[in-house]
Amino acid sequence: MRLIGYRTLPTLLLVLLLTGSSCTSVRQYLGASLVSFETEVSLGEKLAAQVERQQRVLRNRDVQAYVRLVANQLVTHASGDRPEVRYRVTVLDNPNQVNAFALPAGFLYVYTGLLLAADNEAELAGILAHEIGHVVGRHSANQLATQLGLNILVSLALGENSEELASLAAQAGTSGALARFSRDDEREADAFGVKYTMAAGYDPRGLLTFFEKLKKLEGRRQSGLESLLSSHPATQERIDRIDRMIQKAGNPAGTTRRDRFLEATASLRRTGTASRQR
Image 1: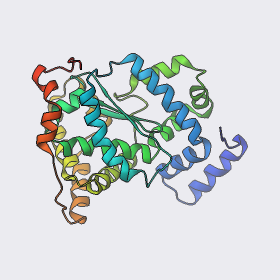
Image 2: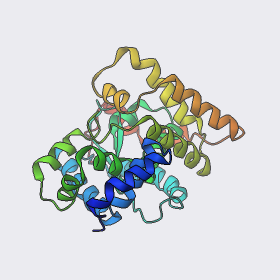
Image 3: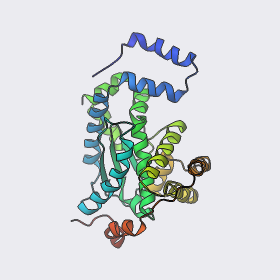
Protein backbone atom coordinates (compact mmCIF):
# COMPACT_ATOMS: atom_id res chain seq x y z
CA MET A 1 0.00 0.00 0.00
CA ARG A 2 1.58 3.29 -1.08
CA LEU A 3 0.92 6.12 1.36
CA ILE A 4 2.45 9.54 1.67
CA GLY A 5 3.77 10.82 4.99
CA TYR A 6 1.33 12.80 7.12
CA ARG A 7 3.93 15.51 7.80
CA THR A 8 4.12 16.37 4.12
CA LEU A 9 0.33 16.60 3.69
CA PRO A 10 -0.19 20.17 4.95
CA THR A 11 2.61 21.40 2.67
CA LEU A 12 1.12 19.62 -0.33
CA LEU A 13 -2.31 21.06 0.38
CA LEU A 14 -0.86 24.55 0.77
CA VAL A 15 0.97 24.31 -2.55
CA LEU A 16 -2.19 23.16 -4.32
CA LEU A 17 -4.29 25.91 -2.81
CA LEU A 18 -1.73 28.64 -3.48
CA THR A 19 -1.46 27.59 -7.12
CA GLY A 20 -5.19 28.14 -7.52
CA SER A 21 -6.16 24.49 -7.87
CA SER A 22 -9.87 23.76 -7.66
CA CYS A 23 -11.36 21.65 -4.89
CA THR A 24 -11.77 18.84 -7.40
CA SER A 25 -8.10 19.07 -8.41
CA VAL A 26 -7.08 18.95 -4.75
CA ARG A 27 -9.21 15.87 -4.11
CA GLN A 28 -7.95 14.15 -7.26
CA TYR A 29 -4.36 14.84 -6.27
CA LEU A 30 -4.95 13.55 -2.77
CA GLY A 31 -6.72 10.48 -4.09
CA ALA A 32 -3.84 9.57 -6.37
CA SER A 33 -1.12 10.46 -3.87
CA LEU A 34 -2.56 9.13 -0.64
CA VAL A 35 -4.42 6.05 -1.86
CA SER A 36 -2.63 3.53 -4.04
CA PHE A 37 -4.46 1.61 -6.74
CA GLU A 38 -3.98 -1.56 -4.69
CA THR A 39 -5.82 0.09 -1.78
CA GLU A 40 -8.57 1.27 -4.14
CA VAL A 41 -9.01 -2.29 -5.47
CA SER A 42 -9.10 -3.79 -1.99
CA LEU A 43 -11.65 -1.22 -0.88
CA GLY A 44 -13.80 -1.83 -3.96
CA GLU A 45 -13.70 -5.60 -3.49
CA LYS A 46 -14.75 -5.39 0.15
CA LEU A 47 -17.53 -2.90 -0.53
CA ALA A 48 -18.77 -5.02 -3.46
CA ALA A 49 -18.88 -8.13 -1.27
CA GLN A 50 -20.94 -6.21 1.30
CA VAL A 51 -23.32 -4.82 -1.33
CA GLU A 52 -23.97 -8.29 -2.74
CA ARG A 53 -24.46 -9.64 0.77
CA GLN A 54 -26.98 -6.95 1.66
CA GLN A 55 -28.83 -6.68 -1.65
CA ARG A 56 -30.29 -9.21 -4.06
CA VAL A 57 -28.28 -10.00 -7.19
CA LEU A 58 -30.51 -10.69 -10.20
CA ARG A 59 -30.69 -14.43 -10.87
CA ASN A 60 -31.21 -14.07 -14.60
CA ARG A 61 -28.08 -14.96 -16.52
CA ASP A 62 -29.40 -13.60 -19.82
CA VAL A 63 -30.06 -10.10 -18.46
CA GLN A 64 -26.73 -10.10 -16.59
CA ALA A 65 -24.90 -11.07 -19.78
CA TYR A 66 -26.72 -8.44 -21.82
CA VAL A 67 -25.90 -5.55 -19.46
CA ARG A 68 -22.27 -6.69 -19.34
CA LEU A 69 -22.20 -6.78 -23.14
CA VAL A 70 -23.33 -3.16 -23.30
CA ALA A 71 -20.83 -2.15 -20.61
CA ASN A 72 -17.95 -3.96 -22.32
CA GLN A 73 -18.46 -1.93 -25.49
CA LEU A 74 -17.94 1.22 -23.41
CA VAL A 75 -15.07 -0.18 -21.34
CA THR A 76 -13.16 -0.84 -24.55
CA HIS A 77 -12.91 2.92 -25.03
CA ALA A 78 -12.59 3.87 -21.35
CA SER A 79 -9.58 1.58 -20.89
CA GLY A 80 -7.38 4.13 -22.63
CA ASP A 81 -8.00 6.61 -19.80
CA ARG A 82 -7.44 4.13 -16.94
CA PRO A 83 -5.95 0.93 -18.37
CA GLU A 84 -5.26 -0.59 -14.96
CA VAL A 85 -8.97 -0.90 -14.06
CA ARG A 86 -10.77 -4.21 -14.55
CA TYR A 87 -14.51 -3.58 -14.56
CA ARG A 88 -17.15 -5.90 -13.14
CA VAL A 89 -20.81 -5.16 -13.85
CA THR A 90 -23.69 -6.65 -11.83
CA VAL A 91 -27.46 -6.20 -12.04
CA LEU A 92 -29.25 -5.92 -8.69
CA ASP A 93 -32.81 -7.20 -8.39
CA ASN A 94 -34.94 -4.28 -7.21
CA PRO A 95 -37.54 -2.94 -9.66
CA ASN A 96 -38.29 -0.03 -7.31
CA GLN A 97 -34.76 1.37 -7.52
CA VAL A 98 -34.26 3.48 -10.64
CA ASN A 99 -30.53 3.78 -10.16
CA ALA A 100 -26.99 2.71 -10.96
CA PHE A 101 -23.77 3.32 -9.04
CA ALA A 102 -20.03 2.73 -9.15
CA LEU A 103 -17.70 1.57 -6.39
CA PRO A 104 -13.94 2.21 -6.35
CA ALA A 105 -11.81 0.30 -8.87
CA GLY A 106 -14.54 -0.50 -11.40
CA PHE A 107 -17.33 -2.33 -9.59
CA LEU A 108 -20.52 -1.17 -11.34
CA TYR A 109 -24.11 -1.91 -10.31
CA VAL A 110 -27.38 -1.40 -12.18
CA TYR A 111 -30.81 -1.89 -10.63
CA THR A 112 -33.56 -3.61 -12.57
CA GLY A 113 -35.69 -0.52 -11.90
CA LEU A 114 -33.41 1.44 -14.21
CA LEU A 115 -33.74 -1.21 -16.92
CA LEU A 116 -37.52 -0.93 -16.62
CA ALA A 117 -37.39 2.88 -16.80
CA ALA A 118 -35.09 3.11 -19.84
CA ASP A 119 -36.55 3.08 -23.35
CA ASN A 120 -33.57 1.86 -25.35
CA GLU A 121 -29.99 0.62 -25.18
CA ALA A 122 -28.52 4.07 -25.81
CA GLU A 123 -30.06 5.32 -22.55
CA LEU A 124 -28.65 2.33 -20.66
CA ALA A 125 -25.26 2.87 -22.32
CA GLY A 126 -25.32 6.55 -21.39
CA ILE A 127 -25.90 5.79 -17.71
CA LEU A 128 -23.27 3.03 -17.70
CA ALA A 129 -20.78 5.34 -19.42
CA HIS A 130 -21.49 8.02 -16.82
CA GLU A 131 -20.77 5.54 -14.01
CA ILE A 132 -17.60 4.39 -15.79
CA GLY A 133 -16.65 8.07 -15.87
CA HIS A 134 -16.86 8.18 -12.07
CA VAL A 135 -14.39 5.27 -11.95
CA VAL A 136 -12.03 6.87 -14.47
CA GLY A 137 -12.12 10.08 -12.43
CA ARG A 138 -11.52 8.13 -9.19
CA HIS A 139 -14.46 10.02 -7.73
CA SER A 140 -15.58 7.39 -5.20
CA ALA A 141 -12.08 6.80 -3.85
CA ASN A 142 -11.40 10.53 -3.66
CA GLN A 143 -14.72 11.24 -1.98
CA LEU A 144 -14.18 8.57 0.65
CA ALA A 145 -10.60 9.68 1.29
CA THR A 146 -11.67 13.26 1.96
CA GLN A 147 -14.85 12.45 3.90
CA LEU A 148 -13.59 9.62 6.09
CA GLY A 149 -9.91 10.39 6.41
CA LEU A 150 -6.92 8.27 5.51
CA ASN A 151 -6.83 6.13 8.65
CA ILE A 152 -10.42 4.95 8.27
CA LEU A 153 -10.03 4.44 4.53
CA VAL A 154 -6.98 2.23 5.00
CA SER A 155 -8.68 0.25 7.77
CA LEU A 156 -11.64 -0.34 5.46
CA ALA A 157 -9.34 -1.56 2.69
CA LEU A 158 -7.69 -3.92 5.16
CA GLY A 159 -11.06 -5.20 6.35
CA GLU A 160 -10.45 -3.94 9.90
CA ASN A 161 -13.59 -1.82 10.24
CA SER A 162 -16.44 -4.15 9.35
CA GLU A 163 -19.21 -1.99 10.84
CA GLU A 164 -18.20 1.09 8.85
CA LEU A 165 -17.78 -1.05 5.72
CA ALA A 166 -21.27 -2.50 6.13
CA SER A 167 -22.70 0.98 6.71
CA LEU A 168 -21.08 2.36 3.55
CA ALA A 169 -22.28 -0.61 1.51
CA ALA A 170 -25.82 -0.08 2.80
CA GLN A 171 -25.66 3.50 1.48
CA ALA A 172 -24.56 2.42 -2.00
CA GLY A 173 -27.13 3.41 -4.57
CA THR A 174 -28.62 6.06 -2.28
CA SER A 175 -27.59 9.59 -1.36
CA GLY A 176 -25.00 8.40 1.16
CA ALA A 177 -21.26 9.01 1.31
CA LEU A 178 -20.56 6.91 -1.78
CA ALA A 179 -22.86 9.03 -3.94
CA ARG A 180 -22.25 12.59 -2.76
CA PHE A 181 -20.16 13.74 -5.68
CA SER A 182 -19.33 17.37 -6.30
CA ARG A 183 -20.75 19.25 -9.25
CA ASP A 184 -17.36 19.07 -10.93
CA ASP A 185 -17.32 15.30 -10.46
CA GLU A 186 -20.76 14.97 -12.04
CA ARG A 187 -19.81 17.23 -14.93
CA GLU A 188 -16.67 15.20 -15.56
CA ALA A 189 -18.63 11.94 -15.44
CA ASP A 190 -21.15 13.43 -17.90
CA ALA A 191 -18.32 14.36 -20.26
CA PHE A 192 -16.89 10.85 -20.07
CA GLY A 193 -20.39 9.47 -20.61
CA VAL A 194 -20.85 11.42 -23.84
CA LYS A 195 -17.32 10.55 -24.98
CA TYR A 196 -17.63 6.80 -24.43
CA THR A 197 -21.14 6.43 -25.86
CA MET A 198 -20.08 8.23 -29.04
CA ALA A 199 -16.92 6.14 -29.32
CA ALA A 200 -19.00 2.95 -28.99
CA GLY A 201 -21.35 4.08 -31.76
CA TYR A 202 -24.35 4.86 -29.59
CA ASP A 203 -26.58 7.89 -29.92
CA PRO A 204 -25.05 10.17 -27.26
CA ARG A 205 -28.47 11.67 -26.66
CA GLY A 206 -29.31 8.54 -24.70
CA LEU A 207 -27.78 10.09 -21.58
CA LEU A 208 -29.54 13.36 -22.36
CA THR A 209 -33.00 11.80 -22.86
CA PHE A 210 -32.70 9.76 -19.65
CA PHE A 211 -31.78 12.86 -17.64
CA GLU A 212 -34.65 14.75 -19.31
CA LYS A 213 -36.96 11.94 -18.22
CA LEU A 214 -35.70 12.29 -14.63
CA LYS A 215 -36.16 16.04 -14.77
CA LYS A 216 -39.82 15.62 -15.74
CA LEU A 217 -40.37 13.17 -12.90
CA GLU A 218 -38.48 15.25 -10.35
CA GLY A 219 -41.62 16.98 -9.14
CA ARG A 220 -43.21 13.67 -8.13
CA ARG A 221 -40.38 11.74 -6.51
CA GLN A 222 -41.10 8.22 -5.42
CA SER A 223 -39.16 5.34 -3.85
CA GLY A 224 -36.00 4.52 -5.78
CA LEU A 225 -36.40 7.48 -8.11
CA GLU A 226 -35.67 9.79 -5.20
CA SER A 227 -32.30 8.07 -4.70
CA LEU A 228 -31.26 8.60 -8.30
CA LEU A 229 -32.35 12.23 -8.28
CA SER A 230 -30.43 12.91 -5.07
CA SER A 231 -27.24 11.20 -6.24
CA HIS A 232 -27.51 12.29 -9.89
CA PRO A 233 -29.46 15.55 -9.86
CA ALA A 234 -30.89 16.03 -13.34
CA THR A 235 -30.52 19.79 -13.26
CA GLN A 236 -31.33 21.81 -16.34
CA GLU A 237 -27.76 23.12 -16.28
CA ARG A 238 -26.40 19.58 -16.66
CA ILE A 239 -28.90 18.74 -19.39
CA ASP A 240 -27.98 21.90 -21.31
CA ARG A 241 -24.28 21.19 -20.87
CA ILE A 242 -24.63 17.66 -22.24
CA ASP A 243 -26.60 19.07 -25.18
CA ARG A 244 -23.80 21.56 -25.89
CA MET A 245 -21.19 18.79 -25.79
CA ILE A 246 -23.16 16.76 -28.31
CA GLN A 247 -23.63 19.77 -30.58
CA LYS A 248 -19.92 20.58 -30.35
CA ALA A 249 -19.18 17.01 -31.46
CA GLY A 250 -21.29 17.63 -34.58
CA ASN A 251 -24.51 15.95 -33.44
CA PRO A 252 -23.28 12.46 -34.36
CA ALA A 253 -25.93 9.96 -35.40
CA GLY A 254 -25.53 6.80 -33.36
CA THR A 255 -27.62 3.74 -32.75
CA THR A 256 -30.25 3.35 -30.03
CA ARG A 257 -30.65 -0.44 -30.41
CA ARG A 258 -34.18 -0.18 -29.06
CA ASP A 259 -35.30 -3.56 -30.42
CA ARG A 260 -32.37 -5.43 -28.87
CA PHE A 261 -32.90 -3.64 -25.56
CA LEU A 262 -36.61 -4.49 -25.41
CA GLU A 263 -35.94 -8.11 -26.31
CA ALA A 264 -33.17 -8.45 -23.71
CA THR A 265 -35.30 -6.97 -20.92
CA ALA A 266 -38.60 -8.56 -21.96
CA SER A 267 -38.65 -11.02 -19.05
CA LEU A 268 -38.45 -8.13 -16.57
CA ARG A 269 -41.23 -6.23 -18.31
CA ARG A 270 -43.56 -9.24 -18.54
CA THR A 271 -43.65 -9.71 -14.79
CA GLY A 272 -43.18 -6.11 -13.71
CA THR A 273 -40.61 -7.47 -11.28
CA ALA A 274 -37.17 -8.98 -11.55
CA SER A 275 -37.84 -12.33 -9.95
CA ARG A 276 -37.62 -14.61 -12.95
CA GLN A 277 -34.82 -17.14 -12.72
CA ARG A 278 -32.85 -18.77 -15.51
